[in-house]
Length: 117
Length: 136
Image (cartoon, rainbow over all chains, first blue to last red; front, side):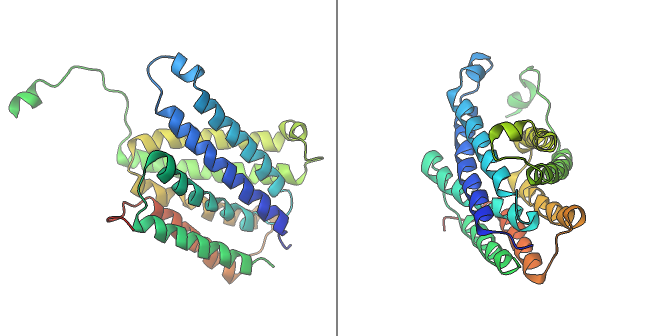
């Protein structure tokens, strides 16, 4: 069974939305203290969870059709966004290994597409 | 120097995982996560409509996301105590389990491109966690 491009696009969209979830969870987690109010009234954490829920909605739509052995590895594209936002919002540096990892992931996804038949 | 070691503060230490425990915990997470993916795929395949209501009332989907949630919570615990450079390669095992389980459960097929593609992704994710020597 050939995996349709539309399914890949949905998984890709899910990984993009999910990467924002991670940003807000990280931002919210940094503001947690030994006070339940910092958890309950933490809008960043709530927004992070909302992004993850939205992301899983699109992921489910994405895996309705097509092969999981093609679609699931595409989730790793989310790491590209995560590295980008980590630099932008948290000042985490780009390193050689990060570029190497992203490069391998991209080549891997290109190969998966060649194997999609 | 010696006064520092002898007058250690008497605060109650919170529980910490050892390196081996953290690795074992992450390995468990990858298995839970992969099992969750199987349930999510099974649920998505039988989904009556693409509405959020159809999703939250789908048993397989909800069971899958429950497993996924447990896996994520355990992962956060393990990541707190373990070194990222050791745990990332373990996390990337999820791609291996999902590929094998997809063949077994959904009768998907494998070809050399897929094998090479997933292998590169596994290595790529494993390398992401390593501390790079200097900026790129």
